[in-house]
Image (cartoon, rainbow, N blue to C red; front, side):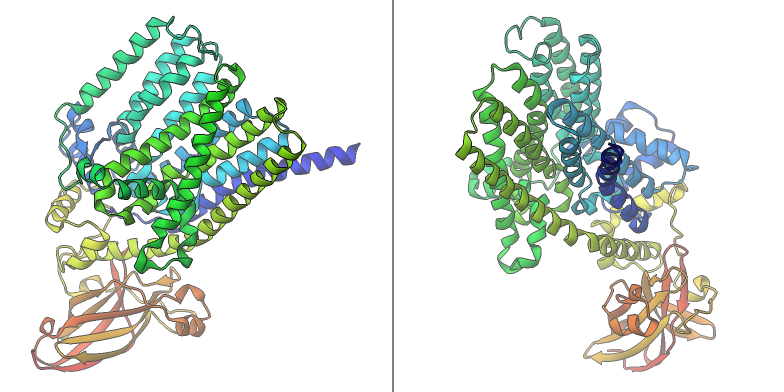
Length: 607
């Protein structure tokens, strides 16, 4: 008896460990790969913070001003609080951690929803929780986990799941109404899709009084309160609302229905389809088709679940157990539809943006739990006679196996992307450091923000407010930022300037560079020409990484496998005559440069 009890305890501990493992993995990936540098839409957060902390603008308009289609009032409160708690320093990494903790709250809500609606023993509940958490903390969301402003995409799902827990709770109806109105308002002013809550929460709230359709219109006070709050939110939201410039028209979507449908299905399947990327011919954009096939399967399963619900719409238990999951699924499907109508004009390839996976990932999560509920209910109704039961079990097993296989492929594909994105952000930070001294427009447009003139204005505002934790460099003399060299344990220093060659009007320089103290490739490589004694002028920045397995073998450290660099620059960027060129490993965290071994001399004819 004691052995059985001990075995049960071990299994429970193992189950709980596996349930929290996805969250632990994502926490480790964020901790290791987060970089404190603003990227694209992050700069609007910096603009807001400079208005608040430098100009003391704390009015309603400051909080609800429009960005794209959204009004980020409640996320802005979070941004402001985080900056205040960080001694008025804007740290994007704290925003990334808020995304993580929001996901943790979603996971807790989903766990309680499973407990409330799924019948079964501990093994069944914990198995569904493990799978659900693996989706909530799916690694394919790396584009959102490592992007500060993207906490906005997690907030509506927090509000939906919290609202469902409130509805399923035993507190009185007035308290439920007030809490759900507050949550819907928070969702509306967190992300544009968040206003969908007013539509999708209404049915389940109305049904939750008795979980029956009869008497839905008796609570007139509820409908009056709900619609009054909804209309107030919408009126305020669309007051002085402007359609964002450059966004495609809905008319394009309606006149290209084949593309819109493909976009819709690809959006839904992207959270599982990315695992097939290594089997895709990119020239034919087959990833869209792969995702669309997966999305088609998911939407068929969701519509089938809706059909089962409608077939048994008079059964209070079916309503109770399924309506919460259908509410979450409706949010995903409607979000996919709205996004398809508004974004298909940008091209089908945008349908599988990793930013959207934080929406689409919840459809398979919903389906796994719905299928479990439907199977149990069908079994209790004796729908599953012997042969049908076997076939149903086989089909369910096959679907689960396909899902787990695709999810595993996608997760494995995504994990290396964290390191790649970290390197890209560090390169972006390096280019940002020199935005005044040496503007590398290509790097800035690709990795920081696409509008250089606006970017410079944002940088000035944030820097003047002392919010930016980036050491900007004001001139191109490298000695002003030259770091103190530390002797590396392996004796290879900071790297080497291997060679330089000329191709018509251009020079091509290359080598490898690292930061031994951080045990990472250099964030960037600076190229300088010698102007005079102890005066080397920075004229180019190499912001790319080239694979160098020879360096990893030489240093006996695989961390340096991407430490190679290469830079092509015009001959006109150098003075005429014999020119000494040096290369420097750059550390964007300290804004310090360290000379690489090797000095190259070119006879520049001033082409």
